[in-house]
Amino acid sequence: MTRRVNDLLNSSLIYTKFLSISATQMRFLSIRSQDLKPSPA
Image (cartoon, rainbow, N blue to C red):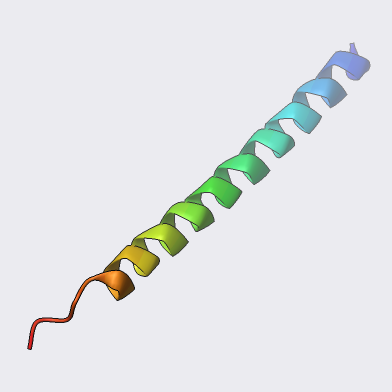
């Protein structure tokens, strides 16, 4: 029983870590695309 709970906790931790990493990548990509755009003069 506790083994299954531990597996669930580990998988959820990995999932949240993956989500935060992808969120950071998306933010970085959006910042990069804004930097690449020519600034309105």
